[in-house]
Image (cartoon, rainbow, N blue to C red; front, side, top):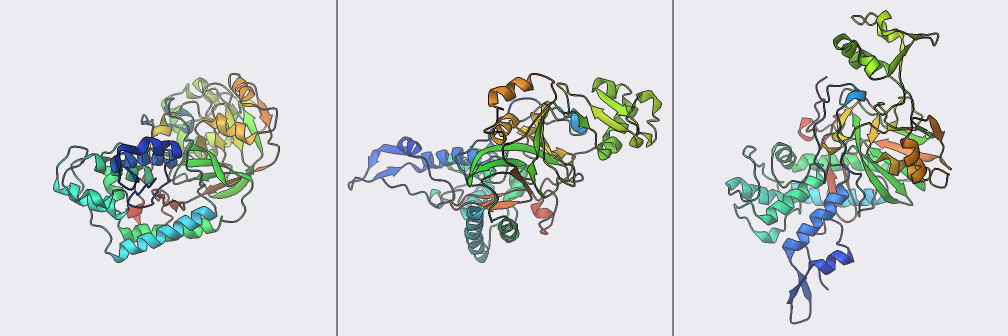
Length: 448
């Protein structure tokens, strides 16, 4: 059986997918079965959507109120963690190999003059007939998202729709097949800058290409995505919400110390200053409604009315939120000791997990489907998934430890690839690539 997509830029279809893809009435005289390209590319997009993980790939989310404090974001429940058929982790020797291959491919693209920009403006979608569609086809062919054999028509047909969705997944954009602002921006980053991005990130990934542990967790900050890795393969991927551009999540190497169920939350000084004081000025019963208590330096509880909220007086106190359904950390915190005092945690509501740009926290990482990750961390202990589900239904303060320390790596990787040719890019949200704003799309922090 022969399968011949134009380029090997993604994971091969599974055997079951192949059976579906075969066009039964297209058997050559030599007995070779061919594949309908349209069906094959369509199936590849589905695989890539699963492989994308950190993009809100198959979920459409509700825009949350990012002007609120970290404990008050208006999430809505819904989207799920991204289990994936692509088991290559973002760190490791396979990624080094993939990046080296991608660099060679992009060097060839650059040597041929790169690609022409597509005039941004009117939305392009299936059924559209515009001269810009010809440029769009050329651009998608350059990176192998569109089969070069489909031609340079000015019609946005199903082939282009499939290619656009694939491109969107590779760039952390919800794959709706419509070319709008964020997709125009990603398409128009020059090939030279994409090549520089790949080269920059090869250095970063090589620094983590040694032995990271038999079981470890990686949080890729620009992708806002966490991976649980076991024996070199990803066992689960989780959408995350990470730090704003002005409250950045740090690059760290640490380990899981323990799991804190139904934790208290001590409000960080930065949030007291930037969020809590303004909230109390506008809404004097805010602390009461959110079950936040105030303690002085002697550990004695004090009344909110004793503080001058029109000054910085509140900075002299400790603010602690009790465990309850609306606690900022939800039902659990994954404690990872580090100098930045950040951690991974649950959240009481989920809507921001559906966004493409998930940079809304004050440095910590909120993890989607956190129960799955905790169950994996606590494998071999009495903490089964059913026991975790039970404790989530309570407000009991309980701690649990993994059998062995689980290494945790928070990294900043804006471009990566695997040996099957899946090349992914993300926005340089913290402007660390040195390539300027042209590859830092969406880097603006949400308004305070």
